[in-house]
Image (cartoon, rainbow, N blue to C red; front, side, top):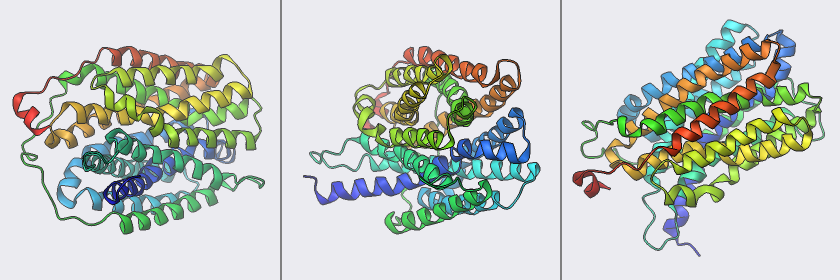
Length: 401
């Protein structure tokens, strides 16, 4: 039985998870479900479809770069909640336009603000993970996992909104508007549950500098993760539909993937807590490579569902693994810069991934070739991560840690 302080930590982590649900589950990954009807209705090529993902990722990079500056001025809580409100409004605007230029602009803007939500929420979750009193049973890795696992519930919500069971799929424009309204509701819950706190700058935070060189292998691995996973998450539903998987089955696949994300904290929290080096990132990247390759090598509903189950249970834990790596190896005042640096590297990979997969998909190899490239990128990332060693802190860092 957990005490009141532990319950407060867990409920705060779940409230933070709503930010992850909106920033990635609703604002980004719902696009995979909406892409087939949008592509058919608007006459897009695979390159255009991928370029929309690239625009979103480019905005995400800009937001990741701006997040530390913004958090220093308004605080992580305000950045997270206000960003969730802004994303909700932007998603509603997605359903009010058909023009490519306007949709590109909306994908850039929603990507930028999503990054602010995700970075600020991740920082709050990292700080929250330190609040567990001794003997409370609160595993810091579980707190981080609950936050990142919120993306899974956002994916499940997207599946239920876009194509509710037993009904016809909602028109893509209406679906965007409902996703926006759900985001606004999530912001209201976050504002109610996450208590305002006075600014508490970490000593030395203004002068803290993050040296990326000791994390070179992990950063390179995270770049390959961003490059590889986004191709799968952008095009997998379209690929399955091309293989004659019925619309309701493709939606169920997406929901299974989302449930996998949601339960992943309970699968990997111990792994993230035990190892301060690149082993968690390597093992998770290897599983992702396998999950991505399965539907490419074996065209069947069984392979699709196995792939979605594995991918969902792993991919957001890769993000949690990098946050855990920062928390294990750096003093607290360097956490914002460390998390932001990893997020930027991740965003660069995401910018490249959708366009490359889209170009390959427009060629003779189709989406099979694009997803094959994604699997190879993830495999390379696993090898790079395995070479990452724990960073030995200086004496002053040991005292802070």
